[in-house]
Length: 574
Image (cartoon, rainbow, N blue to C red):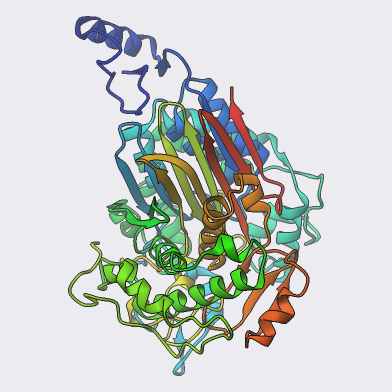
Protein backbone atom coordinates (compact mmCIF):
# COMPACT_ATOMS: atom_id res chain seq x y z
CA UNK A 1 0.00 0.00 0.00
CA UNK A 2 1.30 3.47 -0.81
CA UNK A 3 1.20 6.46 1.51
CA UNK A 4 -1.42 9.16 1.01
CA UNK A 5 -0.82 12.61 2.47
CA UNK A 6 1.24 11.08 5.23
CA UNK A 7 3.61 13.70 6.59
CA UNK A 8 4.93 11.53 9.40
CA UNK A 9 6.06 8.93 6.94
CA UNK A 10 4.36 5.79 8.26
CA UNK A 11 3.43 3.22 5.64
CA UNK A 12 -0.18 3.32 6.84
CA UNK A 13 -2.43 6.11 5.52
CA UNK A 14 -3.34 8.97 7.85
CA UNK A 15 -7.02 9.05 8.84
CA UNK A 16 -6.78 12.78 9.50
CA UNK A 17 -6.93 13.36 5.76
CA UNK A 18 -9.14 10.61 4.32
CA UNK A 19 -12.40 9.21 5.79
CA UNK A 20 -12.13 5.66 6.97
CA UNK A 21 -14.05 3.92 4.15
CA UNK A 22 -12.40 5.94 1.40
CA UNK A 23 -9.04 5.32 3.09
CA UNK A 24 -9.43 1.57 2.64
CA UNK A 25 -10.64 1.82 -0.94
CA UNK A 26 -7.88 4.21 -1.99
CA UNK A 27 -5.28 2.07 -0.25
CA UNK A 28 -6.29 -1.04 -2.16
CA UNK A 29 -6.44 0.89 -5.44
CA UNK A 30 -3.00 2.42 -4.84
CA UNK A 31 -1.50 -0.97 -4.09
CA UNK A 32 -2.94 -2.47 -7.25
CA UNK A 33 -1.53 0.37 -9.34
CA UNK A 34 1.89 0.15 -7.70
CA UNK A 35 1.59 3.68 -6.36
CA UNK A 36 4.19 4.75 -3.82
CA UNK A 37 3.05 8.23 -2.83
CA UNK A 38 0.17 10.55 -3.47
CA UNK A 39 -1.26 13.87 -2.42
CA UNK A 40 0.44 17.21 -2.21
CA UNK A 41 4.25 17.05 -2.22
CA UNK A 42 5.93 18.30 0.93
CA UNK A 43 8.15 21.32 0.90
CA UNK A 44 11.63 20.35 1.97
CA UNK A 45 15.32 21.13 2.21
CA UNK A 46 18.53 19.15 1.96
CA UNK A 47 22.24 19.75 2.46
CA UNK A 48 25.02 17.30 1.57
CA UNK A 49 28.66 17.38 0.52
CA UNK A 50 27.88 16.73 -3.16
CA UNK A 51 25.42 18.37 -5.60
CA UNK A 52 24.37 15.03 -7.12
CA UNK A 53 23.44 13.69 -3.67
CA UNK A 54 21.52 16.86 -2.83
CA UNK A 55 19.71 16.57 -6.17
CA UNK A 56 18.78 12.99 -5.25
CA UNK A 57 17.22 14.26 -2.01
CA UNK A 58 15.30 16.97 -3.85
CA UNK A 59 14.16 14.36 -6.39
CA UNK A 60 12.68 12.33 -3.55
CA UNK A 61 10.65 15.34 -2.42
CA UNK A 62 9.49 15.92 -6.00
CA UNK A 63 8.29 12.31 -6.21
CA UNK A 64 6.15 12.70 -3.10
CA UNK A 65 8.65 11.61 -0.47
CA UNK A 66 9.33 13.10 2.94
CA UNK A 67 12.57 14.08 4.70
CA UNK A 68 13.32 10.42 5.50
CA UNK A 69 13.06 9.44 1.83
CA UNK A 70 15.25 12.39 0.91
CA UNK A 71 17.89 11.36 3.44
CA UNK A 72 17.88 7.74 2.25
CA UNK A 73 18.22 8.85 -1.38
CA UNK A 74 21.09 11.20 -0.53
CA UNK A 75 22.93 8.60 1.57
CA UNK A 76 22.77 5.93 -1.14
CA UNK A 77 23.90 8.43 -3.76
CA UNK A 78 26.80 9.57 -1.58
CA UNK A 79 27.96 5.95 -1.57
CA UNK A 80 28.54 6.44 -5.30
CA UNK A 81 29.77 10.02 -5.71
CA UNK A 82 31.44 10.39 -2.30
CA UNK A 83 32.42 6.75 -1.81
CA UNK A 84 35.80 7.60 -0.37
CA UNK A 85 33.93 8.81 2.71
CA UNK A 86 30.82 6.67 3.08
CA UNK A 87 28.78 3.87 1.55
CA UNK A 88 26.96 0.61 2.18
CA UNK A 89 30.24 -0.99 3.24
CA UNK A 90 30.28 1.32 6.26
CA UNK A 91 27.99 2.48 9.04
CA UNK A 92 25.84 5.41 10.13
CA UNK A 93 23.90 7.09 12.90
CA UNK A 94 20.50 8.57 12.04
CA UNK A 95 18.73 11.01 14.35
CA UNK A 96 15.17 11.73 13.25
CA UNK A 97 12.49 14.00 14.63
CA UNK A 98 9.17 12.83 13.21
CA UNK A 99 6.20 15.01 12.36
CA UNK A 100 4.31 13.79 15.45
CA UNK A 101 7.09 15.12 17.70
CA UNK A 102 8.67 11.76 18.53
CA UNK A 103 12.35 10.96 18.02
CA UNK A 104 14.12 8.03 16.41
CA UNK A 105 17.83 7.32 16.98
CA UNK A 106 18.97 4.45 14.75
CA UNK A 107 22.39 2.96 15.41
CA UNK A 108 23.77 1.52 12.18
CA UNK A 109 27.33 1.40 13.51
CA UNK A 110 29.58 -1.45 12.39
CA UNK A 111 30.26 -4.40 14.71
CA UNK A 112 33.38 -6.43 15.35
CA UNK A 113 33.42 -9.97 13.88
CA UNK A 114 32.56 -12.89 16.18
CA UNK A 115 36.17 -14.06 15.92
CA UNK A 116 37.58 -10.69 17.04
CA UNK A 117 39.82 -10.70 20.12
CA UNK A 118 41.01 -8.07 22.58
CA UNK A 119 44.60 -8.14 21.29
CA UNK A 120 44.00 -8.87 17.60
CA UNK A 121 46.07 -5.84 16.58
CA UNK A 122 48.88 -6.45 19.08
CA UNK A 123 52.14 -8.03 17.95
CA UNK A 124 55.00 -8.79 20.34
CA UNK A 125 53.28 -6.78 23.06
CA UNK A 126 52.70 -3.63 21.00
CA UNK A 127 49.72 -2.42 18.99
CA UNK A 128 50.39 -2.24 15.25
CA UNK A 129 48.17 0.58 13.91
CA UNK A 130 48.53 -0.51 10.28
CA UNK A 131 46.60 -3.71 10.99
CA UNK A 132 43.48 -1.82 12.09
CA UNK A 133 43.70 0.79 9.37
CA UNK A 134 44.06 -1.21 6.14
CA UNK A 135 43.48 -4.75 4.97
CA UNK A 136 41.33 -7.70 5.96
CA UNK A 137 41.43 -7.29 9.76
CA UNK A 138 40.38 -3.64 9.69
CA UNK A 139 36.77 -4.15 8.59
CA UNK A 140 33.73 -4.47 10.81
CA UNK A 141 30.27 -5.71 9.77
CA UNK A 142 28.64 -2.87 7.78
CA UNK A 143 25.44 -1.37 9.17
CA UNK A 144 24.47 1.53 6.92
CA UNK A 145 22.31 -0.46 4.51
CA UNK A 146 20.33 -2.08 7.31
CA UNK A 147 19.74 1.31 8.96
CA UNK A 148 18.61 2.95 5.71
CA UNK A 149 16.27 0.04 5.03
CA UNK A 150 14.75 0.38 8.52
CA UNK A 151 14.29 4.14 8.07
CA UNK A 152 12.69 3.72 4.68
CA UNK A 153 10.27 0.95 5.68
CA UNK A 154 9.12 2.48 8.96
CA UNK A 155 9.13 6.20 8.27
CA UNK A 156 9.36 6.82 4.53
CA UNK A 157 6.74 7.27 1.84
CA UNK A 158 8.78 5.84 -1.04
CA UNK A 159 10.35 2.38 -1.48
CA UNK A 160 14.13 2.29 -1.07
CA UNK A 161 14.27 0.50 -4.42
CA UNK A 162 13.69 3.83 -6.12
CA UNK A 163 16.75 5.41 -4.50
CA UNK A 164 18.92 2.35 -5.17
CA UNK A 165 18.11 2.35 -8.89
CA UNK A 166 18.73 6.09 -9.20
CA UNK A 167 22.14 5.71 -7.55
CA UNK A 168 22.92 2.64 -9.67
CA UNK A 169 22.39 4.68 -12.83
CA UNK A 170 24.87 7.33 -11.68
CA UNK A 171 27.38 4.61 -10.76
CA UNK A 172 27.02 3.07 -14.22
CA UNK A 173 26.99 6.30 -16.25
CA UNK A 174 29.69 7.87 -14.11
CA UNK A 175 30.16 11.20 -12.37
CA UNK A 176 32.70 13.99 -12.73
CA UNK A 177 35.57 13.75 -10.27
CA UNK A 178 35.86 16.82 -8.04
CA UNK A 179 39.16 18.38 -6.93
CA UNK A 180 38.42 17.22 -3.37
CA UNK A 181 37.83 13.61 -4.47
CA UNK A 182 40.98 13.58 -6.58
CA UNK A 183 43.07 15.02 -3.76
CA UNK A 184 41.83 12.44 -1.27
CA UNK A 185 42.74 9.57 -3.62
CA UNK A 186 46.16 11.08 -4.33
CA UNK A 187 46.88 11.39 -0.61
CA UNK A 188 46.45 7.61 -0.21
CA UNK A 189 47.91 6.42 -3.51
CA UNK A 190 50.67 4.15 -2.13
CA UNK A 191 48.29 2.18 0.06
CA UNK A 192 45.47 1.99 -2.52
CA UNK A 193 47.92 0.46 -5.00
CA UNK A 194 48.41 -2.46 -2.60
CA UNK A 195 44.81 -3.59 -3.10
CA UNK A 196 44.17 -4.76 -6.67
CA UNK A 197 40.37 -4.40 -6.75
CA UNK A 198 40.39 -0.90 -5.25
CA UNK A 199 43.20 0.10 -7.61
CA UNK A 200 41.29 -1.25 -10.61
CA UNK A 201 38.21 0.82 -9.78
CA UNK A 202 39.65 4.05 -8.43
CA UNK A 203 43.00 4.40 -10.23
CA UNK A 204 44.16 4.51 -13.83
CA UNK A 205 45.89 1.38 -15.24
CA UNK A 206 49.25 3.08 -14.65
CA UNK A 207 48.42 3.50 -10.94
CA UNK A 208 47.75 7.24 -11.07
CA UNK A 209 44.74 8.94 -9.48
CA UNK A 210 41.84 10.37 -11.48
CA UNK A 211 42.17 14.08 -12.17
CA UNK A 212 39.43 16.66 -11.55
CA UNK A 213 37.02 16.73 -14.47
CA UNK A 214 37.47 13.08 -15.40
CA UNK A 215 34.52 10.68 -15.29
CA UNK A 216 34.59 7.80 -12.81
CA UNK A 217 32.35 4.83 -13.53
CA UNK A 218 31.62 2.01 -11.08
CA UNK A 219 29.93 -0.82 -12.99
CA UNK A 220 30.23 -3.40 -10.20
CA UNK A 221 28.71 -1.08 -7.61
CA UNK A 222 25.81 -0.41 -10.00
CA UNK A 223 25.19 -4.18 -10.25
CA UNK A 224 25.27 -4.49 -6.46
CA UNK A 225 22.75 -1.66 -6.00
CA UNK A 226 20.44 -3.23 -8.59
CA UNK A 227 20.70 -6.65 -6.94
CA UNK A 228 19.69 -5.12 -3.59
CA UNK A 229 16.84 -3.23 -5.29
CA UNK A 230 15.49 -6.47 -6.77
CA UNK A 231 16.16 -8.91 -3.91
CA UNK A 232 16.21 -6.71 -0.82
CA UNK A 233 18.92 -6.34 1.79
CA UNK A 234 18.97 -10.12 2.33
CA UNK A 235 21.12 -10.25 -0.82
CA UNK A 236 23.68 -8.24 1.14
CA UNK A 237 23.36 -9.67 4.66
CA UNK A 238 22.72 -13.36 4.02
CA UNK A 239 23.16 -13.89 0.30
CA UNK A 240 25.79 -13.44 -2.40
CA UNK A 241 27.51 -10.39 -0.91
CA UNK A 242 28.01 -11.97 2.53
CA UNK A 243 29.15 -15.23 0.93
CA UNK A 244 31.64 -13.47 -1.34
CA UNK A 245 33.00 -11.43 1.55
CA UNK A 246 33.53 -14.57 3.64
CA UNK A 247 35.43 -16.26 0.79
CA UNK A 248 37.68 -13.24 0.32
CA UNK A 249 38.32 -12.90 4.04
CA UNK A 250 39.27 -16.56 4.43
CA UNK A 251 41.72 -16.26 1.55
CA UNK A 252 43.28 -13.06 2.89
CA UNK A 253 43.52 -13.53 6.65
CA UNK A 254 40.32 -11.72 7.58
CA UNK A 255 37.68 -12.60 10.16
CA UNK A 256 34.35 -11.52 8.69
CA UNK A 257 31.96 -14.37 7.93
CA UNK A 258 28.52 -14.78 6.42
CA UNK A 259 27.25 -15.52 9.91
CA UNK A 260 28.56 -12.14 11.12
CA UNK A 261 26.46 -10.47 8.42
CA UNK A 262 23.39 -12.55 9.30
CA UNK A 263 23.66 -11.59 12.96
CA UNK A 264 23.91 -7.86 12.31
CA UNK A 265 21.09 -5.85 13.88
CA UNK A 266 20.30 -2.15 13.86
CA UNK A 267 19.89 -0.79 17.39
CA UNK A 268 17.22 1.67 18.54
CA UNK A 269 18.79 4.11 20.99
CA UNK A 270 17.44 6.78 23.32
CA UNK A 271 18.66 10.27 22.27
CA UNK A 272 20.81 12.38 24.56
CA UNK A 273 18.95 15.49 25.70
CA UNK A 274 20.36 18.66 27.20
CA UNK A 275 19.72 22.40 27.24
CA UNK A 276 21.75 25.32 25.98
CA UNK A 277 20.56 28.82 26.91
CA UNK A 278 17.02 27.50 27.32
CA UNK A 279 16.96 25.59 24.04
CA UNK A 280 16.61 21.83 23.82
CA UNK A 281 19.59 20.04 22.27
CA UNK A 282 19.03 16.46 21.09
CA UNK A 283 22.03 14.32 20.17
CA UNK A 284 23.02 10.74 19.50
CA UNK A 285 23.88 8.48 22.46
CA UNK A 286 26.75 5.96 22.84
CA UNK A 287 28.38 4.27 20.99
CA UNK A 288 28.56 7.79 19.63
CA UNK A 289 30.62 10.00 21.86
CA UNK A 290 29.28 12.95 19.90
CA UNK A 291 25.92 13.44 21.57
CA UNK A 292 27.39 13.08 25.04
CA UNK A 293 30.29 15.45 24.53
CA UNK A 294 28.48 18.03 22.42
CA UNK A 295 26.07 18.24 25.37
CA UNK A 296 28.89 18.25 27.92
CA UNK A 297 30.81 21.03 26.16
CA UNK A 298 27.68 23.15 25.71
CA UNK A 299 26.79 22.57 29.38
CA UNK A 300 30.19 23.98 30.33
CA UNK A 301 29.83 26.93 27.95
CA UNK A 302 26.44 27.71 29.52
CA UNK A 303 28.48 29.26 32.35
CA UNK A 304 30.15 31.85 30.10
CA UNK A 305 28.70 34.78 28.18
CA UNK A 306 30.27 34.14 24.80
CA UNK A 307 28.23 36.86 23.13
CA UNK A 308 29.68 39.52 25.41
CA UNK A 309 33.18 38.11 24.85
CA UNK A 310 32.65 38.63 21.13
CA UNK A 311 32.72 36.33 18.12
CA UNK A 312 36.25 35.50 17.04
CA UNK A 313 37.81 36.82 20.25
CA UNK A 314 40.67 35.29 22.20
CA UNK A 315 38.37 34.79 25.21
CA UNK A 316 35.90 32.75 23.14
CA UNK A 317 38.68 30.66 21.63
CA UNK A 318 40.27 30.07 25.06
CA UNK A 319 37.06 29.11 26.89
CA UNK A 320 35.86 26.86 24.09
CA UNK A 321 39.20 25.07 23.83
CA UNK A 322 39.29 24.51 27.59
CA UNK A 323 35.76 23.09 27.58
CA UNK A 324 36.66 20.74 24.72
CA UNK A 325 39.79 19.62 26.53
CA UNK A 326 37.87 18.68 29.68
CA UNK A 327 35.23 16.76 27.70
CA UNK A 328 37.75 14.83 25.60
CA UNK A 329 39.62 13.78 28.73
CA UNK A 330 36.38 12.19 29.93
CA UNK A 331 35.78 10.66 26.50
CA UNK A 332 39.08 8.81 26.66
CA UNK A 333 38.16 7.03 29.91
CA UNK A 334 34.41 6.59 30.02
CA UNK A 335 33.04 6.14 26.50
CA UNK A 336 32.35 2.86 24.70
CA UNK A 337 29.55 0.64 23.42
CA UNK A 338 26.81 0.81 26.10
CA UNK A 339 25.93 -2.84 25.39
CA UNK A 340 29.38 -3.79 26.71
CA UNK A 341 30.46 -1.06 29.12
CA UNK A 342 28.87 1.33 31.63
CA UNK A 343 28.77 4.87 30.20
CA UNK A 344 27.71 7.39 32.90
CA UNK A 345 24.71 9.60 32.22
CA UNK A 346 26.31 12.00 34.66
CA UNK A 347 28.63 13.19 31.88
CA UNK A 348 25.75 15.38 30.66
CA UNK A 349 24.60 16.38 34.14
CA UNK A 350 24.46 20.22 34.52
CA UNK A 351 25.88 19.97 38.02
CA UNK A 352 28.93 18.09 36.76
CA UNK A 353 29.35 20.72 34.05
CA UNK A 354 29.38 23.39 36.77
CA UNK A 355 32.27 21.59 38.48
CA UNK A 356 34.21 21.46 35.23
CA UNK A 357 33.45 25.07 34.32
CA UNK A 358 34.81 26.17 37.71
CA UNK A 359 38.21 24.72 36.73
CA UNK A 360 38.57 27.08 33.76
CA UNK A 361 40.73 30.17 34.31
CA UNK A 362 40.46 33.06 31.92
CA UNK A 363 44.13 34.02 32.18
CA UNK A 364 45.76 30.69 31.42
CA UNK A 365 45.24 27.19 30.10
CA UNK A 366 44.73 24.63 32.85
CA UNK A 367 46.58 21.33 32.84
CA UNK A 368 44.06 18.49 32.66
CA UNK A 369 45.76 15.40 34.01
CA UNK A 370 42.94 12.98 33.28
CA UNK A 371 39.24 12.28 33.40
CA UNK A 372 36.74 13.49 35.96
CA UNK A 373 34.17 11.41 37.84
CA UNK A 374 30.59 12.35 36.99
CA UNK A 375 27.72 11.64 39.40
CA UNK A 376 26.40 8.09 39.26
CA UNK A 377 29.47 7.00 37.35
CA UNK A 378 28.84 3.29 37.93
CA UNK A 379 25.12 3.23 38.74
CA UNK A 380 23.34 5.61 36.32
CA UNK A 381 24.44 4.60 32.84
CA UNK A 382 23.24 4.67 29.24
CA UNK A 383 21.43 1.62 27.88
CA UNK A 384 22.54 -0.22 25.37
CA UNK A 385 36.33 10.06 7.32
CA UNK A 386 32.80 10.53 7.24
CA UNK A 387 29.97 12.47 5.65
CA UNK A 388 26.96 14.23 7.10
CA UNK A 389 23.66 15.01 5.42
CA UNK A 390 20.54 16.63 6.67
CA UNK A 391 16.98 16.97 5.39
CA UNK A 392 13.75 18.52 6.64
CA UNK A 393 10.19 18.85 5.37
CA UNK A 394 7.14 21.02 5.91
CA UNK A 395 5.32 18.25 7.80
CA UNK A 396 7.86 18.51 10.60
CA UNK A 397 10.17 15.59 9.80
CA UNK A 398 13.86 16.43 10.34
CA UNK A 399 16.74 14.04 9.67
CA UNK A 400 20.39 14.35 10.71
CA UNK A 401 22.39 11.42 9.35
CA UNK A 402 26.13 10.88 9.61
CA UNK A 403 27.69 8.01 7.66
CA UNK A 404 31.24 6.78 7.24
CA UNK A 405 33.70 4.13 6.09
CA UNK A 406 36.18 5.89 8.42
CA UNK A 407 39.33 6.96 6.56
CA UNK A 408 39.66 7.43 2.78
CA UNK A 409 38.26 4.31 1.05
CA UNK A 410 38.01 2.60 4.43
CA UNK A 411 40.31 -0.42 4.72
CA UNK A 412 40.96 -0.20 0.93
CA UNK A 413 39.37 -3.62 0.45
CA UNK A 414 36.76 -4.02 -2.29
CA UNK A 415 35.31 -7.52 -2.42
CA UNK A 416 35.86 -8.54 -6.08
CA UNK A 417 32.84 -8.08 -8.31
CA UNK A 418 30.83 -6.00 -5.82
CA UNK A 419 32.31 -2.50 -6.05
CA UNK A 420 31.64 -2.07 -2.31
CA UNK A 421 34.37 -0.36 -0.28
CA UNK A 422 34.65 -1.96 3.17
CA UNK A 423 35.15 0.20 6.25
CA UNK A 424 38.12 0.28 8.59
CA UNK A 425 36.10 0.99 11.73
CA UNK A 426 38.10 -1.52 13.77
CA UNK A 427 40.61 1.33 14.10
CA UNK A 428 38.05 3.17 16.20
CA UNK A 429 38.46 0.62 18.96
CA UNK A 430 41.21 1.04 21.51
CA UNK A 431 43.72 -1.47 20.14
CA UNK A 432 45.75 -1.05 23.33
CA UNK A 433 45.11 1.34 26.25
CA UNK A 434 46.98 4.60 25.71
CA UNK A 435 47.84 3.91 22.06
CA UNK A 436 46.48 6.51 19.61
CA UNK A 437 44.41 5.59 16.57
CA UNK A 438 44.54 7.23 13.11
CA UNK A 439 43.01 10.44 14.49
CA UNK A 440 45.34 10.66 17.49
CA UNK A 441 42.63 9.57 19.92
CA UNK A 442 43.57 7.35 22.82
CA UNK A 443 41.19 5.03 24.60
CA UNK A 444 40.71 2.76 27.59
CA UNK A 445 39.26 -0.68 28.29
CA UNK A 446 35.77 0.80 27.83
CA UNK A 447 36.47 0.86 24.10
CA UNK A 448 38.49 -2.35 23.83
CA UNK A 449 37.83 -4.83 21.00
CA UNK A 450 35.24 -7.56 21.70
CA UNK A 451 33.15 -9.83 19.46
CA UNK A 452 29.98 -8.12 18.26
CA UNK A 453 30.93 -4.84 19.91
CA UNK A 454 30.51 -1.44 18.25
CA UNK A 455 33.53 0.87 18.26
CA UNK A 456 33.29 4.34 19.73
CA UNK A 457 32.48 7.08 17.23
CA UNK A 458 32.64 10.87 17.12
CA UNK A 459 29.65 11.18 14.78
CA UNK A 460 27.34 13.87 16.16
CA UNK A 461 23.99 14.27 14.37
CA UNK A 462 22.29 17.02 16.38
CA UNK A 463 18.92 18.76 16.53
CA UNK A 464 18.18 22.02 18.37
CA UNK A 465 14.58 22.78 19.38
CA UNK A 466 12.82 25.92 20.51
CA UNK A 467 9.47 25.53 22.26
CA UNK A 468 9.51 21.86 21.32
CA UNK A 469 9.95 22.42 17.59
CA UNK A 470 13.19 22.01 15.61
CA UNK A 471 14.75 25.13 14.18
CA UNK A 472 18.33 24.01 13.57
CA UNK A 473 20.11 20.76 12.80
CA UNK A 474 23.79 20.15 12.18
CA UNK A 475 26.40 17.44 11.94
CA UNK A 476 29.83 17.08 10.43
CA UNK A 477 32.65 14.96 9.04
CA UNK A 478 36.26 14.92 10.16
CA UNK A 479 37.02 12.40 12.89
CA UNK A 480 37.08 13.89 16.41
CA UNK A 481 36.70 17.41 14.98
CA UNK A 482 33.08 16.42 14.28
CA UNK A 483 32.33 17.16 17.93
CA UNK A 484 34.00 20.56 17.92
CA UNK A 485 32.46 21.55 14.57
CA UNK A 486 29.00 20.71 15.86
CA UNK A 487 29.51 22.68 19.07
CA UNK A 488 30.81 25.71 17.18
CA UNK A 489 27.88 25.64 14.76
CA UNK A 490 25.39 25.64 17.65
CA UNK A 491 27.31 28.45 19.36
CA UNK A 492 27.35 30.42 16.11
CA UNK A 493 23.59 30.20 15.67
CA UNK A 494 22.55 30.55 19.33
CA UNK A 495 25.15 32.89 20.86
CA UNK A 496 26.17 34.97 17.86
CA UNK A 497 22.80 35.00 16.02
CA UNK A 498 24.36 33.81 12.78
CA UNK A 499 22.35 32.13 10.05
CA UNK A 500 23.38 28.53 9.26
CA UNK A 501 25.64 29.47 6.34
CA UNK A 502 27.45 32.11 8.41
CA UNK A 503 27.82 29.64 11.29
CA UNK A 504 29.42 27.00 9.05
CA UNK A 505 31.71 29.49 7.33
CA UNK A 506 33.10 30.91 10.58
CA UNK A 507 36.67 29.85 11.52
CA UNK A 508 36.96 26.79 13.77
CA UNK A 509 39.17 25.39 16.47
CA UNK A 510 39.61 21.98 18.04
CA UNK A 511 41.13 20.51 21.20
CA UNK A 512 40.94 16.78 22.01
CA UNK A 513 43.02 16.70 25.22
CA UNK A 514 45.72 14.48 23.73
CA UNK A 515 47.79 15.75 22.03
CA UNK A 516 47.65 18.87 24.19
CA UNK A 517 47.30 21.45 21.44
CA UNK A 518 44.74 23.79 19.92
CA UNK A 519 44.13 23.35 16.21
CA UNK A 520 43.27 26.85 15.02
CA UNK A 521 41.81 27.30 11.58
CA UNK A 522 42.93 30.27 9.50
CA UNK A 523 40.45 33.14 9.68
CA UNK A 524 40.48 33.97 13.37
CA UNK A 525 41.08 37.62 14.28
CA UNK A 526 44.65 38.88 14.13
CA UNK A 527 46.55 38.18 17.30
CA UNK A 528 44.31 35.38 18.60
CA UNK A 529 46.91 32.67 18.01
CA UNK A 530 49.62 34.65 19.79
CA UNK A 531 47.29 35.56 22.66
CA UNK A 532 46.38 31.91 23.17
CA UNK A 533 50.08 31.12 23.30
CA UNK A 534 50.53 33.71 26.05
CA UNK A 535 47.82 31.92 28.06
CA UNK A 536 49.74 28.67 27.81
CA UNK A 537 48.15 26.97 24.82
CA UNK A 538 50.24 25.20 22.23
CA UNK A 539 48.68 26.36 18.95
CA UNK A 540 48.90 24.71 15.55
CA UNK A 541 47.50 26.61 12.58
CA UNK A 542 45.58 24.62 9.97
CA UNK A 543 43.95 25.52 6.66
CA UNK A 544 40.67 23.75 7.34
CA UNK A 545 38.85 21.63 9.91
CA UNK A 546 36.25 19.16 8.64
CA UNK A 547 33.01 19.67 6.77
CA UNK A 548 29.58 20.33 8.28
CA UNK A 549 26.05 20.48 6.88
CA UNK A 550 23.09 22.24 8.49
CA UNK A 551 19.49 23.34 8.07
CA UNK A 552 17.86 26.20 9.92
CA UNK A 553 14.27 27.40 10.02
CA UNK A 554 13.27 31.06 9.90
CA UNK A 555 9.51 31.38 10.20
CA UNK A 556 8.35 28.84 7.63
CA UNK A 557 11.42 29.18 5.41
CA UNK A 558 14.13 26.53 5.42
CA UNK A 559 17.75 27.75 5.43
CA UNK A 560 19.93 24.81 4.30
CA UNK A 561 23.70 25.29 4.40
CA UNK A 562 26.58 23.26 3.02
CA UNK A 563 30.14 23.71 4.26
CA UNK A 564 32.02 26.08 1.92
CA UNK A 565 35.29 24.23 2.61
CA UNK A 566 34.35 21.23 0.46
CA UNK A 567 31.99 22.60 -2.17
CA UNK A 568 28.86 20.96 -0.83
CA UNK A 569 25.32 21.63 -1.97
CA UNK A 570 22.18 22.89 -0.22
CA UNK A 571 18.75 23.24 -1.82
CA UNK A 572 15.12 23.94 -0.98
CA UNK A 573 12.15 22.21 -2.63
CA UNK A 574 10.18 23.50 -4.43
